[in-house]
Amino acid sequence: MLVALAALGSAGPADAAVKQVRYVGIHPIPASEGGGICYIEGPHVHIFEASDRLQYRDHRGANYFVGDPVAYGYDGQRYVYRGHHPIHVDAVVGDDVPDDEFCYIDGPHYHSFAPPEGPEFKVSGDAYFYVGDPPRAYVEARPRMVRINAEYQPLVYERPVVTVDPPAGWIGARAEFVTPAVVVEPPRAGVRVEAVAPEPSVRAGVGIGIGVGVAAGIGIGIGAGTVVRERPVIVHERPVIVHERPVIVHERPVIVHERPVIVRERPVVVRERPVVVHERPVVRERVEVQHKTMVDDRPHAAGHHR
Image (cartoon, rainbow, N blue to C red; front, top):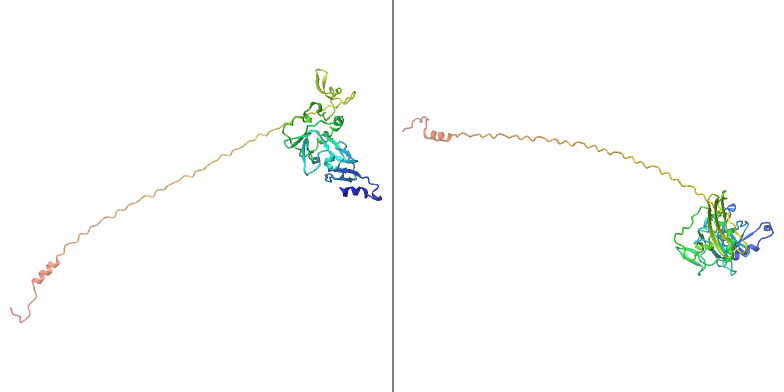
């Protein structure tokens, strides 16, 4: 912080022609200056203006950003809020000058800070809901400040999703603090929307005239004799036509060719060998030999005498 403050008083004569604009806290950088987020939390200066007065408030002569920084590329610590709520700027920037401003973003959104502890906020589903009683300044500034929602509507970024029911006493569910609608396009012929209500009550009414036109209105009384007329919100929702192409699945037939199994049986030939029985003849040579030994036909030698 001291460095940023020192820079404010160190500008020399060469810098006198450059207008320095004071800021405090983080804020988006205009696209013409490169875009993105300035992460300086303390007081500092830039040479570009904070031209969007719906997203900035004055804090001790410096511009303080009250919008959703995630919509512009912020990737630091973030907290989820739903609906309108106060911002205690002195607690966020860390000074001792009380300064309460209001954020007028309708739906779920982010901030880089959590609210101080106390009964004016309730937490449900990790989101902060404002359940306190807003001051008169909030009611008086609301018709002008709620136009910030028209600026956030076309922005494409990851918005928080809150699915829980709001707690009892949430400002967005109280009839006396119903948010006036955001103008999307001019009304067509035959359609009229007004907001008229006497002080001190706040009333909401809807009327339909058959054959003449349609009249609907939400009125907020702000002081005697003050009438706030809000432009109508006509939202033409284009039908969403989904042409579903038929899904045709062509199932290819599965052909299984079974090869025949041929079993060739080899004949079994049994050849029976004939059994030949040779009968051996009975030889009687030995008998004859014996007989020969008994009869000797040889001649006797000479001189042999019987």
